[in-house]
Length: 473
Image (cartoon, rainbow, N blue to C red; front, side, top):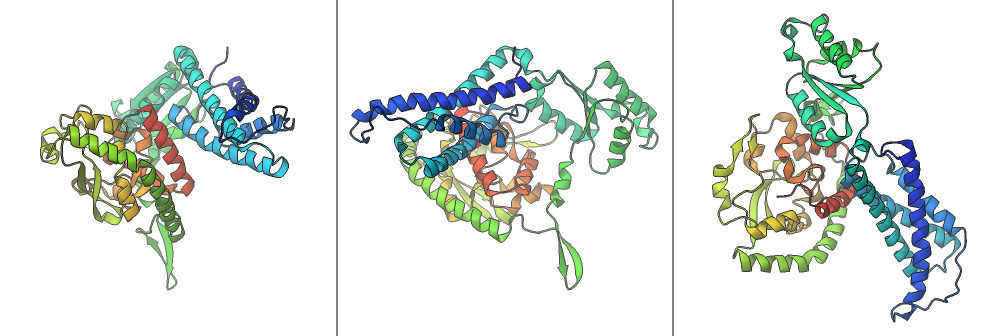
């Protein structure tokens, strides 16, 4: 029996992708002949023969490109939306590569056949993955890594890590144990140089639960504890990991400038250099204009529906904070009752951690048509106007409400160093299920890892997230 996270399943996946490609090529070759009856399709002889080597080169190219994108690494793409978005990009690159082979070897290949073959190959690869995931979900034992995880630390960093792993990897681990060292009576009096009780408690848990991996999570300033715990576990056969303190990311892109021979640390260095900013703006104008033209009929229909069901106004404008703290008016389709902003104090609340929660499911201010628009993210389409005006980007941190920005900590303000976006790293990892001002680290990750390819990847993944209806309300 194949197990999902096994070498055998990886080999099986590569072979199955190859079979899907060959199956698509053969079946579409026959279908292309049938399509001779269509008036807009050029006639193709029924006895045409394509070079045999194409039936070997095409699946090999397809599998190699997918492997380059690590699509066969099941642990890397545990979430379905991650796998499908990466598969989309990889399939596109594989298609270009195969078109290049045809250009250099066999230019008489039917263009209609090639497009049909690419589409069906991609469809088959998506379909078998969806079926396999459903099968593995029914066979719950195959979702198990047979790994037991111990998270040890103190304070907010430990609980932040607990929530993150609990949401994303809880089904992939046999056991997850969370141990706050403050539960050890002697912890307050112990020091990293002398902590026998704390270390003994950690080792006891490792033995009791047969722990295979330990994740250490301490806040900034407690690096001595990280060293003490990791050093005292060196004799044990297990993996030891350290969770980064996201607060330190506020200085992750600080740069040293030499001014008149004196080195200075620039804490306000721009996140995007001039070249990256030009490329990003060109990307926004080109793709934003194309999306605006394509979506314009949808926006007209959406506006009419809102006008008929909920009445005027159709649009909703709101003050948001953009790049470098510059305010602007963000435009959306109205999805709430009139004067909804005046009622936000009645629905806004403070959670147990003291954080402001201003968006939640079953918000009484949202209209019936608004719930549908939010689920499909159609209410966001007018923001293409903000993109074309240069106030926003297609991809970036979401523009935050001014009163929330006023409460930002120093490290959180780093998310304001790039243009805000219609979608971003935060949205594709939770959408409305996660408040953006409570997950600024996602935006900082995007800033520190920015590339135009990351923007493209996020846009494709956003499309899959919307199609799968993940977390929007």
